[in-house]
Structures are given as structure tokens and as C-alpha cells.
Amino acid sequence: MAPTERKTRTAGLDGLRAVAALSVLCLHVWLYGQPDPDSPTRSGLLDRVVFEFRLGLVFFFVLSGYLLYRAFAGAALRGGDRVDVGRYARRRVARILPAYYLAVAGAIALLWGLRGSPGVRLPDAAQLPLFLVFGQNYSRDTFFMLNPVTWTLCLEAAFYVALPFIGWFAYRAASRSVRGQTILLVAIAALGFGWAALDYALGWGTMAGKALTAYLPVFAAGMAVALWAESRRVRDAAPLRHAATAALVVGGFGLAIADGVWHATARTPAGNPLISILGDVPAAIGFALVVAAAVAGRGPSVGWMHARPLAWVGLVSYGVYLWHVPLLLFARGHGFLPSSFVLALLMILPVVLLVSAGSWYLVERPLLARAHRPRTPRTERRRQAQLEAHAAP
Image (tube, rainbow, N blue to C red; front, side):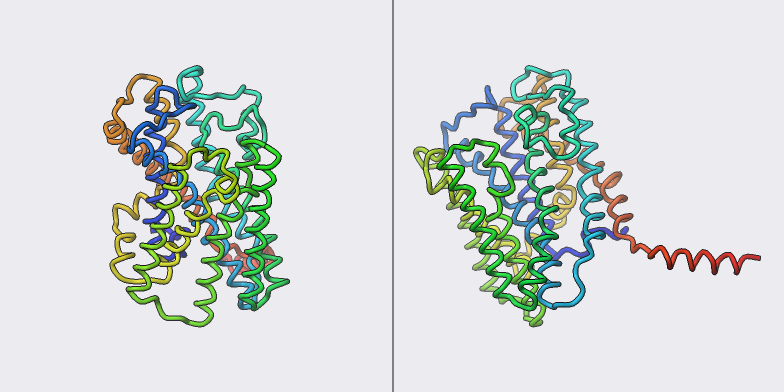
């Protein structure tokens, strides 16, 4: 297989990405099966349970925090070479932009003729350029429109930009210090809590609640696992024992479930100050524990993460995330989507996986392989060209 980003990931994380992606897919199958997707009703136990699958979004952010901060945390701990920001930027661009642009074009093709259908919210054509620069979160004319799930990519893109600055500060202010980086991560989380408190007190609204600042504690949970994993690597620590691994997995998923129950049973979650400020941080901590088990544990409690079908879904999960809502809305708009949640899921899942596989094998993987090829410095390329010219007959 061509070299890709997967080769540098810790085993088992693809399986966790699959769990996150399938959770979000199930949520939206349920949501867009509602008579009015903009005002869904949660009347029964199934409705309440499936609605809490929204926590798959939190899982994605935790995974991003871990995967992307690990190199910066390691560089700061070792005090050696810094992360090559240019290489980091090339990889991030190759990872998200081509497949994202393809999905934006696909959403326009699938949904532009369905304006006014339930769940379909389309911007004016003049506003479409905002989607090309991840600007849809910052305008009321595009917020949650076209492909609503892309609001999370705006957060991811903002995190990608912020991370090299965080990494630089960790390198300069907390070099070779686990404690210093821990203080930095606590400060980042505190900034997020402060933002959420101001949002609640001043009533800034939904757009402020979907800003990167509001989700800093969630990203920090994944970043903390990265710091922990790198500190273990520096110490050459042995893998966790089976019992400790199982405790992390069970405790982590238990925390996430408890978070869902808390939100589902609160009488006025939107007006609850504790929920408004803490948000889904308990779930984020739980997912961070599961990631920690995946990267440092062993035994049957993490073995299921390596199952080939699950890992394959994780491999194509970016396509699942990008394409499932436009495909759901297209099916509903043309009367193809069954009213039963289970039947709708069984119908849409193969289609989403097929399209996602095409996105991975035809777009994402080739461009990732190209981005990961080592680049020869310009002077070295010039010298090689001169040698080749002298060697020519």
C-alpha cells in the first residue's frame, strides 16, 4: 500500500474513528427521518438514546487533539528538532481539502434542486465562496447550511492553524517539562470554560457556542493523552496491563454514557448553567481514557478496535462524515428514505460506504501519499540535476 498517514497512527485508532463516524451517521438517519428535522421530538427511549449519538462529534475532536498534538508534545519533551510546520501544513491540506471540496460540489449537485424540502437549508449562490475557506461558521447567511456537519470542519481547520502556535509555546516555555505542558493544557481548557461562561451569561448565541474557543477543553482532553503517551515513550514505559486497559475502556465509555444520560434527563439543558459551561467535557474525558487504552494498552478490551471491518470503516470515515447528510437529504427529498429508522439506516449505510470508499481510494489516499513523500531541498535538487547533466552521454 502507498505510504499514508495511517502508517504513523497507533493501532486501534481507526476502529475508534469508525465508532465516532457511525455514531454521527445514526444520529442523522434518525434526525432526517423526523417530520421536521429543525425541531426534532424525543418522545421515547430510542429517540433519546440515538440523539445522544451526537457525542460522536466529541470523539472526533478528542482524536484530533491526540493525533495532531503528539508530534508537538514529543518535540517539546525531547527538546530536539521542532516539528516541521511546512510539512505539517502540507499534510493537513492534503488530508482535508481535496475530499472536502469534492463533497461540497457533490452537496450542491445533490441538493440545489431541493430548496424548501425538509432539512435542506441552502445559502445564496453568492455566499458559496465562504464554504471554500471554512468561513460558513462565521456568517448567519451560511451557518448550518448546505451540508450542516461541516461546521465541525471549521473548528478543525481553526485548530490546525492554532496548533503550531501552541506547539511553539510548549517548546519555548515548557521544554523537557511534562508539568509545564500540563499547565499549558489546563490553561487552554480554562480559556474554553471562560468562553462558555461568558456565552451563557451574555447570551452570545449558537454561533459563539460552535466556535473553536468553546471546544478547547475537548481538544485539550485529547492533547493531554498525547502528552501522556509521549512522556511514556521518553521513559520507554511498558504497555499497560490487561486490567488497567480494561478499566480505561470501561470507565471511559461509562463516562461518555453518563454524560449522555445527564443531558438527556436534564429538564432544561439549554438553561442549565452547569451543562452550558461544562458542555460535554465529561464525555471528552471518557473518550480520552479510551484513546489512552488504545495507544498504550493491550488485551481483549482493545482487541475489538482492530477488527478489520471496523478498521476499514475508520479508514474511510472522513468520506462517511462528508457525504452522509447530503445523501440522506437527497434520498428524503426524492421519497427514497424509509420512515423506519432501522430500514433507513440499512438503506443508506451501503450507499454512504460506497461513496466514501471512492473518496478514499480515488482522492484522499493518492494525495496523502504524495504529501508524505520526502521533499528534496531546492539546492540538493539543483546539484542532482547538474550531476545528471554531467553524467549524460
